[in-house]
Amino acid sequence: MASDDRQFVDALARGLAILESLSRAQRPLNNGDIARATQLAPSTVSRLTHTLTALGYTRLTPGGRAYELTPKNLTLGYPILAGMSLIERARPHLKHIADLTGETAALAVRDGLHITFVEVVPGSNMVAVRLAMGGRLPIAVSAAGIALVAAMPERESRTIASRVRTYIGKREGDLDIFNSCLAQAREEGIAIIRDAWRPGIGGVSVAVQADNDVTALTIPVATGSVSERNMRGPLADALREVAQSLGRGAY
Image (cartoon, rainbow, N blue to C red; front, side):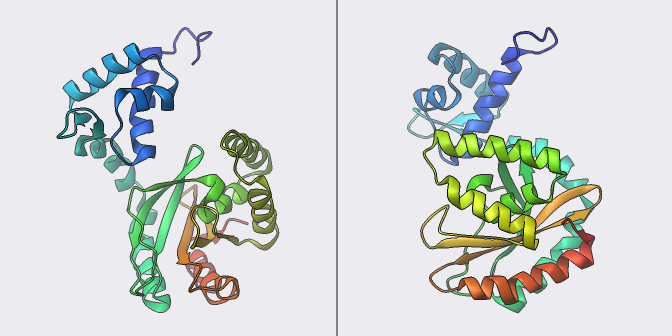
């Protein structure tokens, strides 16, 4: 944590780390799972999950052995989303993309070393990839994440990219995929990734600067049905058009 900072409250940081671990897992976790994910002592985790449950932010699953987040956590995020006027302006454009392409269209923001989808319009194609609003993906395997890193000011971009590479190394991921996709995004202004998160899933994304924030417009695809050529052509063109309408391309 930040033991050299007298203003830093370790207990608060640990509680938030538990909420973040449950959010990333997107499934119930028991105390042992949480301890491994957060690297906290099991006794500390037990006290904190008890406290979070008493406060209503977590609850035990019916079996009584694992914890999951409750809807109360949404009250923390809704004011932020309500303040993002870009979401309201992006919604009809995302619907236009979904109607035009048949693919799911989404708006994403950076959340640490992850991205979070803050607006999603599902596609009509039978094989369109389904996303959940509020869902998260690691930057390392996300077209939206790579687009956002590429669009940052140079110093910030290099710092975040370095942290992502460390994240990949710890999980024995493929650094070459991330490095090549990031270099391409910086050069071409479009991020394309295929089969990095899961086999058969890819994405194309473009960053947009609006409302003093950089966000990412993204289209996830089933790589078995959508070629890289189509991702670089019609899908990328649709995203660039919307980016120009919403603000300005961030590259």
